[in-house]
Image (cartoon, rainbow, N blue to C red):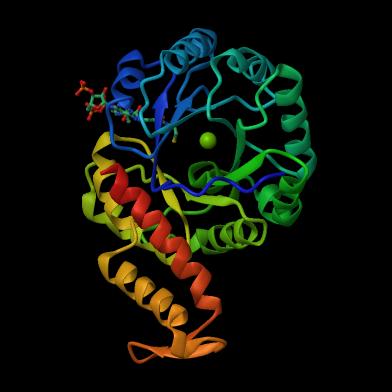
Length: 293
Ligand code: COA
Ligand code: MG
């Protein structure tokens, strides 16, 4: 329907809906996005109370520049439909839906959101975390043309379980899933957010997988602990060198002596018009991050 608004989504922190302390603390943290979770982080017996707590946290506001979303339960569970209906009054920035398998699933979620009275500006983000979602990824992404779908979030823990894959440091088993998800996101103008890293004290390992995510083209990463925010923000922000290079590309194409040219040499590198859009996007995101700092 509409392109997701350009803004930094480097760090997307999950906070369990059943953990009042985490919900309150999340407000103070420097994540770009908060994902208040009603799904995997909440036990079945705590689902309804957690929904109430998340509605309360969202209504309480005070998120500053952060986007606050809620992750709902799947529609195939006893809670998914009521999550959508109940959260409408709390006006989250969006809903994150798990276990999406097809374009039809996206249409169904979008329809339920419209019926429940969500503003058109309230986005739908979906988890890519099932083998079927990988096989149907184009159809899922294409559903964004008719719906409020705005972002893909990798669910690597669920994928590992369903694929019977091993979670190694190099994420060898996930390269196809990660790449095909970024490709589909880019083809349809969606945001792409990488999966979580479970080993909280292992900062080195975390930095390695953040770098992998950046290399693959992800906009940011989902996080499970406050200690992961700072390194993630730093690694997913355009580096000073990248911004400098992007500014040089923009300046070169704007120079009167280069008017009408499609290809130039900038700092010794072949630079084509195709690099200009990405340079402009990178500078814009960097300025937003600087402005927020
Ligand atoms: N969001 C906000 N605050 C969090 C947080 C989170 N995800 N994880 C921890 N905190 C807070 C704790 O409440 C604690 O606050 P305090 O200093 O005011 O007491 C502080 O950060 C330090 O937490 P720590 O003691 O190191 O961790 P923990 O043992 O309390 O919690 C987890 C560990 C894994 C249970 C917790 O980090 C968590 O629930 N993470 C999110 C899990 C999730 O949502 N999973 C679903 C998606 S995969
Ligand atoms: Mg999950």
